Image 1 (cartoon, one colour):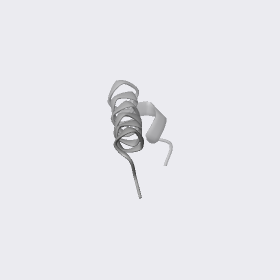
Image 2: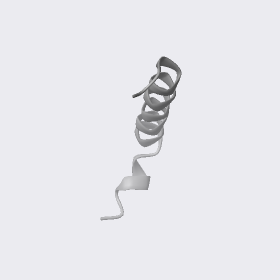
Image 3: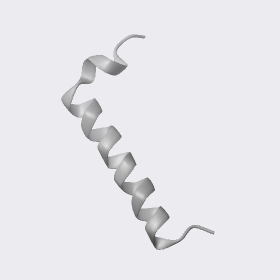
Image 4: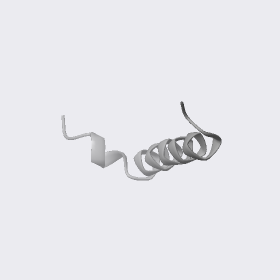
Length: 31
């Protein structure tokens, strides 16, 4: 079971990862 704090942490981590990809698109372009 996921508590509110864990849910917020996972959600914030996901947002940070998406934001980093938006700022540095070159990170994921190495296909």
